[in-house]
Length: 387
Image 1 (cartoon, rainbow, N blue to C red):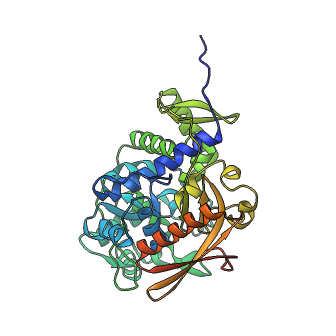
Image 2: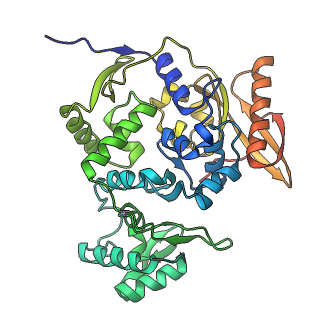
């Protein structure tokens, strides 16, 4: 006997996502200001821009500040800064790091990213990973120091400057940096002044199949219903790989199908509770906030004017956004001057009194998190998108 597929619409999905992301009208405080739990509920926080990561996490935890996020990362050690989904820098819960690394290790290698004479052979890759693990054990090294150590341990070929990067050339071995992180032998250290450092977290990746199941289910809990290509794009795999992963999980009964506004999508098995609620809340989300990057379908999250102003060639995250009742309705920019800051918000709708008050409250909250006094200006944002 066939079972009718459950149907949900954008409003109910958006309301559930906001509530689970801590972005609804009245977010629930994290227990004991557990910022690791906040990051877990986000399925990781993008941290290429550290100040944006601090804001992204703290804005979901009432009363938290950027100092609290740094304390969780560098003092308490409940967060780890490493290479996560899409090979980009993320904050991940340290207690879940083994699971994340196991899942990330399941990603197929991208063999066509570099020219054949630049790529690492399998033997060279093994040598690099061994060298990185040894060089970073019980110490922190800057990028330049790690370059030298890998060259000494693996051989001069490892530091041949043949890897194109940011209008310059990097040593060959650096193409394996994200993989070294995914193998549990590299993550970010505390830093040395303005210099980035790396250390060996000495974390063994969990079983790949079990870890990937957990991460997919966590992603679907936060951002589902979603399709295989949407998950693959967020995680860093190909659409074909995503389809294979979802197919296996569906066969195992770990995920189930749902009708999302006429599209076949997936949720974690048993996670089919959607309240008859409308999305509520106003938030100022920073650069590369995961809600904008992971949330799909993109045309519903970035409707009309938002697609033109808030996306950069279709890519989300390059601009801080004004989120109003579950959709992007503006962009914003913060300019600091000592202990003061100007928050310019360009709304795509004409703010009424209630919306203006909510934006003012959010600008003040941004200032509180960053430790500055924020002044709100409603007007056009002239700053361009982040690269």
